[in-house]
Length: 174
Image 1 (cartoon, one colour):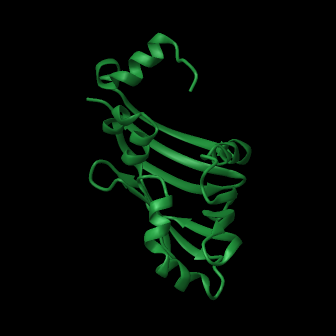
Image 2 (cartoon, helix red, strand yellow):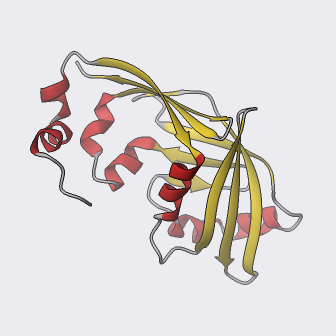
Image 3 (cartoon, rainbow, N blue to C red):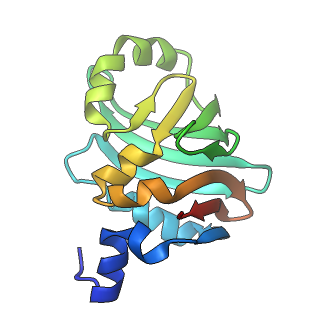
């Protein structure tokens, strides 16, 4: 990770001290290219060999995935996800995505049988089943080294847009 300028590092180290009184609502449209660069930066030892996403203006996300799976070998799927409602913190810190299509006939039973193995391979704070993907936002911030930002989160919404992932974020520091 690059060295951050001292003022930025100070804010990230003690955000409550430097951002007290902040009440910020922001919409961040993340373009397809940036999103896919972030997805491509996953650790090399994961079973996921290819992962990219494209968005749909109808609030759907299409995740293109190629992975090495035990027993069945290499699999390639395009999963269509529907983002859940906005989440509020600290009451409901899980971003939910319903998997609406993309699995083949045998996939769901295999996922159920392999659930524990799959869970071991995922980053802390990510849960995957045959019907949904869940992301625990504070756990992901902690894993990335930004746990001190978690108390600033008030509300978060993720949705699909026209070639963009739309993030609506409400940050609040008392």
